[in-house]
Each structure stands twice: as structure tokens, then as C-alpha cells.
Length: 282
Ligand code: PLP
Image (cartoon, rainbow, N blue to C red):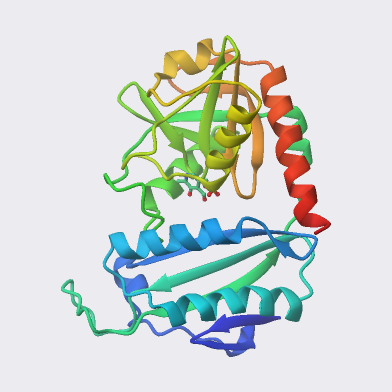
């Protein structure tokens, strides 16, 4: 299996990481996950734009050559590893330097990428999942896709401990997002999701769903909503690159309730699948 590592395509076994990489000490790096369907990357440009934004917000140098090398690596890795269905993970760290909170603006960033096979979680998409409500303890720049994911991983563990497939985080009463997904609710044929501000990651799938919903005449409201509104919704679903659109059928935690899989969720799932199919056979 090949990986992209320090600007070269090498065997995975040959890649060894310096413990002086700033992503090790400080989580000082950013990343992206790009889904691959039938050997073709899906919405790659949007992911690269978000990587650029994440790097810019953290003052991590991300030159055009770096971007070009990573873009090239996506295609090279898919080919070298004969990846059909899966994803490409890529990470850009501020680079290697002796441990010091104060970063130097002149360290060279370090990037790597690997591929992984995966199948669409069809069963979850058809049957829905249970989610676990948990307080959002993360920092206030959740809009940056950094490798610093402690709040997210703790939330995910809590969800699993309660037999839930995903955590739904809330700040006080206000629902923000999942541990690695965004959340939508549907009430009276209107969609609602947290605004894309500093409290959530503006998911690429979230953006696609908003576009598809608006195209088919649904209104989307970007007013934050409460955990109570989630329980009282007609439908709810999570979105992400790997989950696509997955219905929420049960809520556990401080509040409990069940939800049905509704027509709006199903319609959006079909529309997204149709778009994915054009990539898969493109
Ligand atoms: N929110 C968080 C915290 C995430 O980590 C992710 C993706 O990993 C998402 C939302 C969904 O984003 P996307 O649709 O771009 O995968």
C-alpha cells in the first residue's frame, strides 16, 4: 500500500513520523477526508478550498506547490492502491520543530495522505441511527478542521457507551453538531440546521444538502435550535462525507425520544445518491 509522505509516494511501512512534528505536541495541523466513488474523488475542489481556509485561519503556510502536490497525490494514491470505494485522508501540519508553544512562521509545513477502503453505510442510511445528547465542550473555533479533536473523540466514546452511533453536541440548550457530522431537523417541510459560524464545521455534505434542498423548493433555516426542537421534529438526519445522509430515529441522553424516517430525508438521500452516481460513473 502506497502513501504520500513528505512530498513522495512511498510504501506505508517506510513512512515514519518525527515526534517533533507540531501535530504531535500541539495538534497543530489541519486535515481533510475526501470520499472516493468508483475510483473518482467526490467534490475534491471544495475539500481543498476548506483545507486552504483551515490553514489560513491557523496561520499555517500552505503554498500553491503544496496544494498541487497534494492534489496530484490524491490521484496517484487512488491509482497506486487501486482504490475503488473509499476515501483519501490528508493532513497538513505546521511542520517539524523542537517543542515550543511559540511557532516560527518559517518552519516548513509537512503533509501526508493515505487511502482507505470503505463501503457506503447502507444499512444505517436505510434504518436510521440512535444519537446521544452530550454537552459540547470544544473550543470556540469549531469551524477550523484541525486534528485537535479531543472534544469530538470524547463525545463519540460517550455515544458508543450508550449504544448510539453518533453524539449530538449542544452548548446549553442549543444543538451544534455531531462528533463528526452536521445535523438537520425537518419541521413542517422546512429544514433547519445550525448556522455556519465558529461553533460548527461547515460540512461539505451540509452544503450539498442545503443546495439540493433549495433546488427542490424546500426552505432552509439557519437559526440555531434546541434539544427539545430535535425531539419534536418531524424528521432529523446527520450528514458527512462518509455517512452521506443518515436518518436519526432515536435520541438518548438527558432527553429521550424516537423519530420516524420521513419523506424529506428520503428525497434528499435520493438526490444526493443521484449526484454521487454521476461521479461514480464519471
Ligand atoms: N462536523 C464535524 C465536527 C466533522 O468532523 C465533520 C467531518 O468529518 C463534519 C461535521 C461533516 O463534514 P463533511 O460533510 O465535510 O464531511
